[in-house]
Length: 264
Image 1 (cartoon, one colour):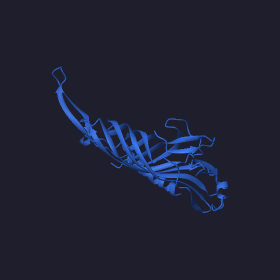
Image 2 (cartoon, helix red, strand yellow):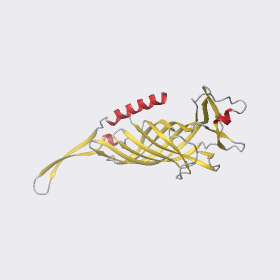
Image 3 (cartoon, rainbow, N blue to C red):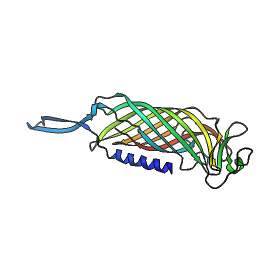
Image 4 (tube, helix red, strand yellow):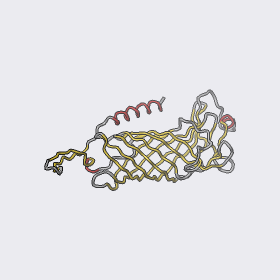
């Protein structure tokens, strides 16, 4: 219920952002058309103060997936489609051309990620110290783990990230509204990586010392139309070594497809 409420508020604010108006600077010139006649034209010269618009959202929600390698196929892990991430970015320009059409931006981001697994699987460390999956019922029957009761249980991997993106972007005006396309890379620092299971009326920490990589690099691409933004993030380095459902050790990379809005 809390997630649905948060998502509803997010969508409401995003809708308001889409319809927010953007200001532009216009220039009117009068010149000879070559036939001895004067012509007056008004056109969009540049964006306000020649500033770049933020290519990443102030607030966003994204759906997560795990890949077997940076651009590999989907990993064989019991990941649910409800896996998600929420977060925000604060961006500022590094440089911008005089007409405001091209430049580079950087900033700082913070995110909270949840990889949800199918209800009967938990992520834990095996005897070799590698993350693997175990049936929740089997896990709960081990000494000290307590029984699974009822049907209200959920298993997931949760972590936080600080992110430092750097993006090149092109921007222009369509119908008096800003449009931009940006590409870049991102440094990521992960922390608080833990796996959990909710059962028996409480949340249980399955593992707090997973063999994850705290530092990672991502590729980013975003498209902005007015204040609404859609973006894609590809993990270029592995996040976690996992024994997949086929018994193979893989280096899982995180992928996200998200949407958000800017307040400016």
